[in-house]
Amino acid sequence: MSLPKLALTTAAVAEAAADAVIIGILQNGDGVGLAPGSEAVDAAFGGELLAVLGTLGATGKADEVVKLPTLGRLPAGLVVAAGLGAPGADGSLTAEQVRRAAGAAARALNGSGSGRAVSLLSTVDLQAAAEGTLLGAYTFDAYKSETRGGAPARVELASPAGGSAREHRATLKAATAIAEAVTTARDFVNTPPNDLYPASFAERASALGKAAGLEVEVLDEKALRRAGYGGLLGVGGGSARPPRLVRMRYRGAKPRKRIALVGKGITFDTGGISIKPAANMEEMTSDMGGAAAIVATAVLAAALKYPLEIIATVPMAENMPSGAAYRPGDVLTMYGGKTVEVLNTDAEGRLILADAICRAAEDEPDYLLETSTLTGGQIVSLGRRTPGIMGSDELRDRVAAIAKATGEGGWPMPLPDELRGDLDSKLADLANVTGHRWGSMLAAGIFLREFVPEGLPWVHIDVAGPAYNNGSPWGYTGKGGTGVPVRTLAAVLADIAENG
Image (cartoon, rainbow, N blue to C red; front, side, top):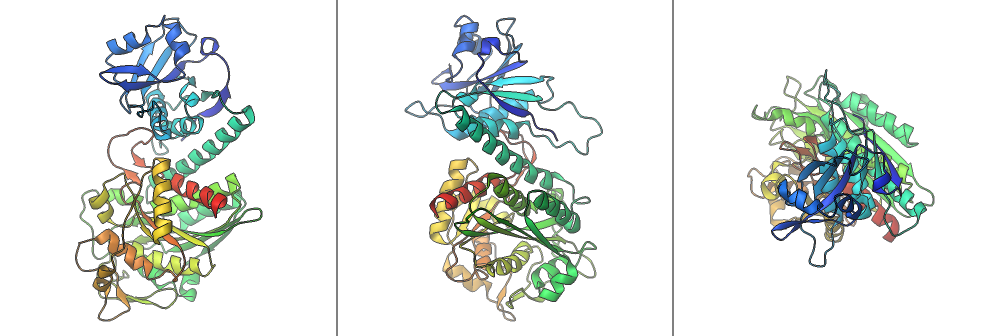
């Protein structure tokens, strides 16, 4: 995987020695319009660019990409027109519209042989254009014996009219760091489970953390047993590859708050004894998407130098059926002493998260943020692109609003008290499932709440669908790992750093 190098430019398009120029086009009633920043390209076409685009069938809808040769009108040989969709009533465009258009354009240029491109989408929103370009250019070809060529080696982003050059450089630097964190999470998710298992995942996370200057601790199965991580040991007991717990600590200058981050790291999920159907089981390589996002976010926090203390607690296990696997009917003693009756071994993520949440709470954080590919109920309720967000009411709503603003999406969901009784166990403090499928996403959130200390603001982000795209590419999102919710977590941390 190689991403293009981004740079800022103030050079006029008519003088840019590039292979391609990227512009934005708009849905404009029944026709197509030009986005701001495209004026020089239109002038090069003698004011007839819209007519040419119309002849080619362009509509300006989101994710549309139309290519047309310049025939010598510009130094660049190709114009790439990326659809932004319809502007707002006031003519404004959102950051997500720009991000998606930049991503679609970058995907269209992958493998095209274009060595250098100039993007004018950045004149609308520099950060969104930078993020979209890098994320759209992402491909995972580590296991391909032959590749069709990568993204352009260099993309120059036209500097916006407002702000100083210094501000623009800072924006580009932050956008690049965020996009690289997302691609780090994507790489983890896309790595097949024969190469990414608890020990190797822990090694890779540790290496990334140490390179970023984080304190890193890795607990192996012996250390986990001594400390009483019953959920993690129970889930991981059926695999020949034993579990791990990774702890990563970042301490910014004069930290204003202490944040606990927790992410589910099931490197492959067969369902255990309660085995899953064979169809689409290969997608369970993504069941560590939450952990991938948390590791990437912890490293990103150091890169962006947030004035926070951040402690990530990441449990990693492989859920396999074997003679050593935990069984329906087993009772596990979790870290911290609570007991859980296992009714379904395919509800394993909440068991390793319960251990991790209890350990994370011992650090006395001001906030606890957890994310996981936790339930199929999230996909049933909200589809494949909208995370379900649960937890303390105020923090839940704050995170949901930020998630929507980032373009990753998210919807605040309740934790109905009446579902708690359905988790009662005849043997233990609680059961790991309700025994019915109604409100399964919410019941999982209620289960996790049992392990959060009273008074600690916390949030759970269920990304079972959003962490993995099993459909066609769209916008800046290709097939496979998406890196959701790294950008949401980064924005939440930035918000906490600023507002407490």
